[in-house]
Length: 198
Length: 198
Image 1 (cartoon, chains in turn purple, yellow):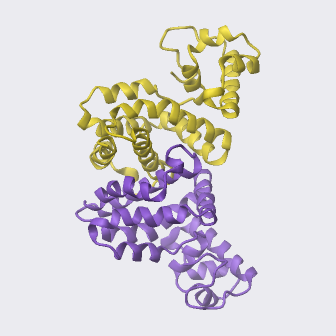
Image 2 (spheres, chains in turn cyan, green):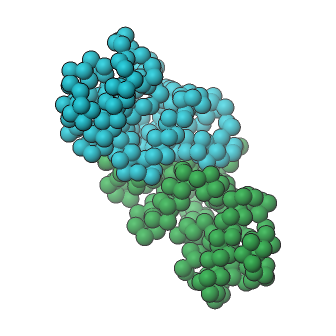
Image 3 (spheres, chains in turn red, blue):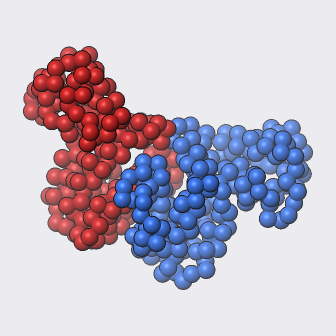
């Protein structure tokens, strides 16, 4: 839901940093080894040596704990809300604007780069990113896709955003790396929209 | 031009494996440290402790040596030729077909995955991939782009292919990972074409 250093939306107290980080570490291990579907709050509690009720108290439900464990500096629900706030024909543009709005801020970019780099090198991190993409992000993008094969189209749209991020931030290819956000939105928005039009 | 374990197109003898690999290693260091523009055949020869004439004899020109040093299992000129062989309106489709035709073969995919992984982790490998992209691949794609900002559009097209490769082969996200090549071409071809239409 939120990065571990931020307070949860609900206003719950964040708990002691040690307990929180033990739970997050246990969650990463559980989801990497067992997958998102099979991973359980109970299994994570056992790994962390705490009571399962404490997990719900700190992190809410399984999805919220998963998102916190992946440590991405944005709330997936905010991305979904941003898309839902514009008409169907502008959702491609809106997704590009929201996505690169996050990446363009260095402090938020770093944890995403770190996860992307880990996922290239380690199967456990790749498993986390794959599950985050398919279980958290793709379901928030598919409602904007019309026609059949919505999941495939949503994945293709997300893959394009990741590819642009790879060239813009990791490889720093010019002129793409220094293209202003508005121009990037004008460039890639209609292309992503094409996947949304089904 | 060709991977080091293959014979060059011109039929030149490949030289002793030791000398060749010394030259390729020296070339990777030279291009990573000095960049493609500033890197020179003479500088590479010095690093490898051989005569510059030998480099030309084994590898032809600077671009051919660079491509050999990057060790990608395809000839960039073949990609350019494949695109040039179809009408403008089918070049997006053709690029997707050629690109994923290469990636779909496990033996050719491995060296590309290795370079992509290295580029995520090491700046020197990122520099090589960036230079390969901008100096070798983008110039072969830009002639298919109509209108202004051809370089930016070519980069956006290439970034989409890399993003799809990331989800399909590294993260192995379904259904994208097992979508047959023809369906992938039908899905992404028209989208890449959009960048070509300017």
